[in-house]
Amino acid sequence: MQSKDIKKKALQLGYSGCGIIPAAPFEEYRQALDERVKAFPKSKDLYEPLYGLVEPPKQAKSIIVCIRGYTQYKIPESLNGRIGKYYLFSRYPFYSHEHRSKMEFETFLAANRCFIVKASIPDRIAAFKAGLGHFGCNNFFYTKAHGSYNGIDVWVVDTILDYDTASENTLVPGCSENCLKCVQICPTKALSGSLSMDRGRCIPRLLYSKDDPNEADEKAMGTRLFGCDACQDICPLNKGKFTETEEYPLLSQLEPLLQPEAILDMDENTYLKVIYPQFPFAGKDGLPTWKRNALRAMKHRC
Image (tube, rainbow, N blue to C red; front, side, top):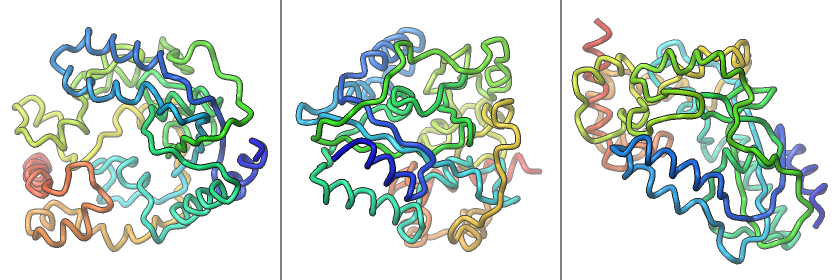
């Protein structure tokens, strides 16, 4: 199989970009983790598991990266600012076009004897190395078409392919370092400089932590239930990216269940069968965390 055939198929299936790189260790990622651990020792336990993403398996030969934006979807007014856009739109349910096309792409690879190797890698850096976009100061991956609102699908395969030219300097932001609006607006000051972030202070991490927040963090979380878009919403590179021309599959049916009052009344069965599959970040035992967030959101709504 040739790389051009893989890219052609990806575009036919609705991806906005596809790139291919060799399955080599991500040494720049290791270096970045070392720097984060040194800068934010209290978050060391959150960074250490990520070292496992540095080295692809020995049988891996190539990494295929595909980009798909979700800026076409309508943001429900009652959920805007409460649930991050990534959490709303990046996990495609099995009945969606995005899921079906992803499955078709994997079938295409297998039919052409390009077999997928089970592995996890740092997808944002892989996307950059594949020439699909650039980093922002807020650590998000940006494309010209969708800003930072991208879903990244990655396949590690056992086949040698033709590769895209990788940049020699990955961890350099493609936006103006003099801007730093994202750093200035960060509610918990998890962002402290260009491409610098304390993972343990980031609101999404605090929101699905099972530990109760302190008073300052609770105030910073405000009415949020899951996720935080502060650094993305203020970014000049994201201005006007959301066209909101399409309904996200079945989100209108989910919306009533994602209101704080409904979450407080929710039973375990509804959570496991309806909410957890779409929002798995808090875990199967995460309903108490959702309820805690709902109580705080109602308190700060008043």
